Image (cartoon, rainbow, N blue to C red; front, side, top):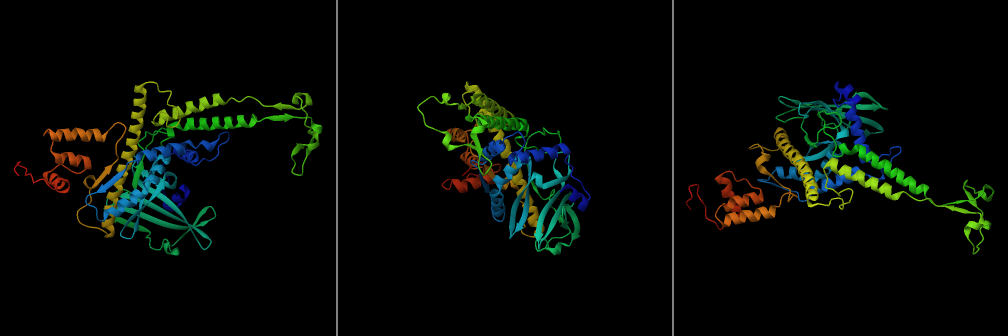
Length: 446
């Protein structure tokens, strides 16, 4: 894809060779591609990503106030949230591409190995990105190349269609050559659309590959241990294979069948009530080193938990090693903070995507009125974390309300995640949740 983008747009991927190799390695580990001397059956990256994704969205809820046109866009984002988060955890970064559908937008997650960063700013944000999509029609294969660039006056999208010649890019074809691309324009400027027109999910981990601005997979610090686990699993499997019981017999007693397999003839076996050792046949059954391999496996899994920030025992399933309440609390706290980091990652991407929907909706004439502000209109509820008990805090607020130390509107606004900065916000809370209460004016009179 890099050479195709260079040929089409004259821009190269800014990702370094070390990061390219690391990204390939992350996806190879996740998809279980075989490595010589390693057993990929354990699929540890799949387990890590699945457990984190389940924990992040365990009690996830969203609300828009008011809803209206933006509701369908929020529903489309929530429909792909798990796939998008999983792609980000594996590749370090995932893009959410809005696709116009009806009077709203659908979203397509673009994983890290399917796009090429062409420019980044000092904070790692994309300033130009290239994507490629393969299409087929009438026995011919086409490559649809797209370059998105952030400009001062908006988003610039350049689109090129090429007919592939084997593994080469081939010659450029007009966009009207395919039904899927006939509505596209070679160059499109969307004023008012921020960035590259894509919402970004980036893992909040320091780049441990080359120290650059690229995001890394959640299991990137533990890649070496994951390979060690694969080698341990391979050795353990070979140990069991080599430890199978065997019968030794002289060469002249063996005969080959039609498939080339050598077997003992049936007439050689005669049932006698005697010790088999006296019949000239020896059974070989070596002892297995199972416990040493299992101990090494658990040690590797505990190392992965520490490097990634998971709760002790989540992978190794060994809680007996934590003998004090302090150790248990520390491990649980680290895991809770890890989950919160990824929840904040999705929340930032969600707000960015909704802001992008508002800008694109105005550019396409789908919406109008006041600009959408996700900071006040969108409310996310993640439920109770390990270090935070909402029920206990709610009971404390109720005690403060009963004692006259806190206005009930403020407690209700906190519980339901509603704005409460102004008297108008508090009046809205009273109208919705306290219909029996009389209006309280700012001067305290009723």
